[in-house]
Image (cartoon, rainbow, N blue to C red; front, side):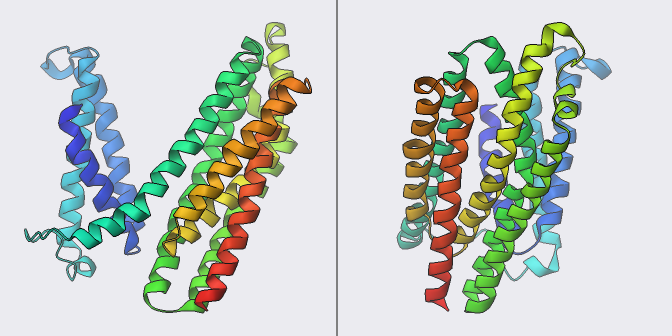
Length: 316
């Protein structure tokens, strides 16, 4: 896998470059092709198909490396081919280290990395705390979390698109367009997750049935708790969609340090703390832990949206 690290990092950079120029569709196609390459190569190299040696687990590493190189070559080919990208000669071989630009990238990017670490840490620690409650709460937690993670992909993509649209209008000095793009993204994220919440409220048992046999008497305890957690997750989803798109809007105006601080306070100071108190001190168990997450994300959604409203008004 180590041989795939450099092309993997270059894929991330070039993917962001192309997306920032409002070309997300080719990126999507290339990533999908990379996924297909990875799946085919996994089976081929693991089990030694088509006369190739049987590599077992090591074949997965070779397959991942192959898919990274494949995506990199496809991205390079697209950048060289697309006429709209030719005014940006990033692949002409010229390179000049700019200390000021590097410092600016670190100042913008480091808080984003910390924020991602804090958010992942919140969910990881929550899973650990749920595990202390037993196997049934942990199984129900995984069902609710997996469902929330799947629907979260859409507002996360909207958030990335919002970053691009807000950033472009900032560069064009279009203050009104920047503000409208930001609130359009926040609204879309919230509305989509509201629709997902309604779907969860209307058919929680159907969703649980995708993960286990709801008719099996042995699963009834997990099914009942999963449905309760999904009810909380539905509320959780709405505010999560707002906060991730609001973060994307702020990222578009290069505001990352304060959102990082807001995230630390929201996720750990409010979300985990209130979840722990509700779950363990007030005896609400895993439902209390999920309510804590919802409270933390609600705080983040409100404060981040307010901050974008204030910042975009200043630019206007």
